[in-house]
Length: 235
Image 1 (tube, one colour):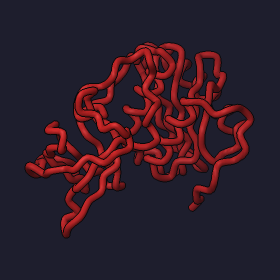
Image 2 (cartoon, one colour; image 1 turned 30 degrees about the vertical axis):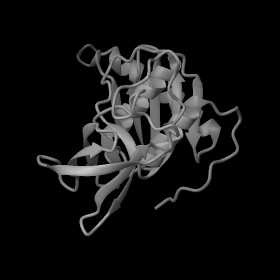
Image 3 (cartoon, helix red, strand yellow; image 1 turned 45 degrees about the vertical axis):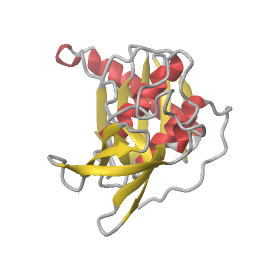
């Protein structure tokens, strides 16, 4: 099995888009690269461990493939394409009529992508680009959690470091759990977590909690099987 190594030399300056893409790759096991691509197949920005040329060629190819699929009547509303190939797998998510997100994965990683992480990354890319997303607005937002005890119950929580400062000026500040009135002076500051109760109905190998922060805000916190934590309120 291939292993992830450090990033390769870039052929263009990194932007907020590449930071969002890198955060997505960190949340997705067996991922190698990701790109934001326009309707002409031009890569706006990218991230990962693959050579930039390879990422850009793949992005252009799958943007064209998604366009061709949409030209077939029954698939005109298709917004996501997953391909498992012999060497690698690919996930293409349409952001709007002109831009798409491509994730390049190990051949066994095609169906292991966190839906929550993918939805949040897609929405953040749209926000930074000033786009109006045409598909799912995220209902879950990734956070960092410190846990303790036998059951590894959450004890502290804070915003995901990779996303701090990336909010576009086009969008007003988010509501609780970190509202303007309650937001810690330091965005990276930890908030204490009080577990109110356990959440039922989660999928296999997930754990959910209803929690209260030291700010008084209450929300649902879920731990996915790969150790990712998400809340149902935007941080």
